[in-house]
Image (cartoon, rainbow, N blue to C red; front, side, top):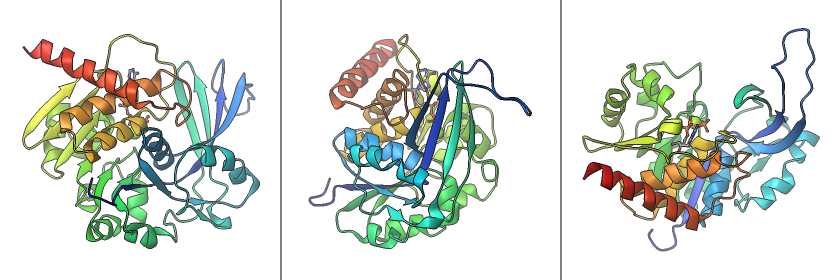
Length: 315
Ligand SMILES: Nc1ncnc2c1ncn2[C@@H]1O[C@H](COP(=O)(O)OP(=O)(O)OP(=O)(O)O)[C@@H](O)[C@H]1O
Ligand SMILES: [Mg+2]
């Protein structure tokens, strides 16, 4: 990383996740259900990726807005604890409350969210112009759609850019999605998103098509690991076998942090892929999205083993 430019900015809506666990069944219209537990935590890919980057030792800033209502206020201790630089977090009444009710039943989840106000923080231009800013991570296409000049502005300021589309019914199959994402250096969809955006079911074909538009494409594929597409080559890497899957919330955001940390440190893309999978895997092995504190020693060990077993299989 060039001297003095060590700040990674992560942009995306900050939600107040109200997570209900221990449900026998999902609620139905006209019925009431009771959960065994509830937790209130900061959510949204922008924050979760930033928190994991901070845990991995990077300087990560959150570019988002938060309300001044009591529900938004409950997030303050967890935000302060996360190690994320909150200098560019805009506080304004119209940005809240922005809750996501998460209902977890047998590992499956249902969500109910409300977006409040615009996704564009008033601090955006100042953040991108910060002399320390090195990279911008966009955690969801919906935020890019609200700020169409985001990639161009970031690139103009000399930053590299990554984009996780994150499923969005309004956008995912629109033919102009790729065009609006032009300029992103790294594209990080999951398998369902890659198929829908590329318009084809075969995952390798979908990844190759997307790689015609972005220099680096990484397709995340849950328990199957992930695939890298770059310079006409495809490199699939399976996730480690075995191990508990306790909570998949935020696995993709943890993956993004692992991949970006390695890529920004100048390590080869295949190594970055392995570190992304290691972070995703460590994240599903404990409960809570950003609540999992990634440790770079664990990430190093797991990613090294992944690449070693891949080489053995290939040999
Ligand atoms: N069921 C699982 N078993 C093992 N590993 C998993 C599982 N789900 C996710 N992972 C790990 O997390 C990484 C990213 O997960 P995934 O492909 O689910 O991303 P995503 O769909 O973007 O997730 P998110 O729900 O956070 O948006 C995977 O590459 C893998 O390492
Ligand atoms: Mg995702």
